[in-house]
Length: 247
Image (cartoon, rainbow, N blue to C red):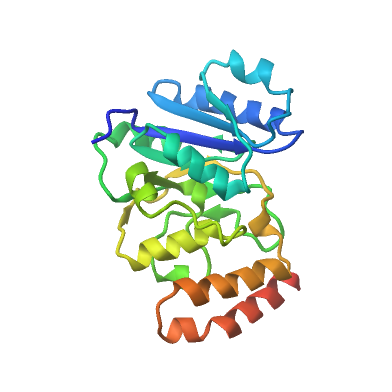
């Protein structure tokens, strides 16, 4: 079993303008989770960026920082999963804020197994027709939409790496593809009802409801979903969902 901390918080950042959101996230980690032994990784995808130094070098949470060119957000997340030492890993975006529910979850994690730990995610400033709350959930609803938000999944680090991480052939929806794969392969999940872990910032490529998003969803479900009625209905379902989102 891993001898590291119970949790790694992994924060990939890209481009200029993310310093202030990152500072908000690191400050909230210190305030909410400061009593716990938590590893904090920050990976900067722009090796030329210089506006991070004063923030991250002297911060109270002592983030472990690496500058690495990557092929996108999921490539960065896979790199961080491979260097994480925590028993579990939870991915945050710059600007996301951990909540008291994550502090309570850490209090009860005394060992690690191959079960996902889930928590609720709030998106208070969500885009139109995006839920403002994702409660913890792990069921066949994944056939129809990504009901389990990645900021609400603490993956066992070993298990995530065993699955090969997030599949890079899906640059917009790799977390959704991985969720379907894990659920179909019988990976279990547990949670405490009503426990929210993160208040997430709006934005992100998966919430840009354009042709590329729905084309990728069609492809990943063709590739990943097992044969059955749910799979056969996906083209009609995705077309209807796209119409509704754009209405």
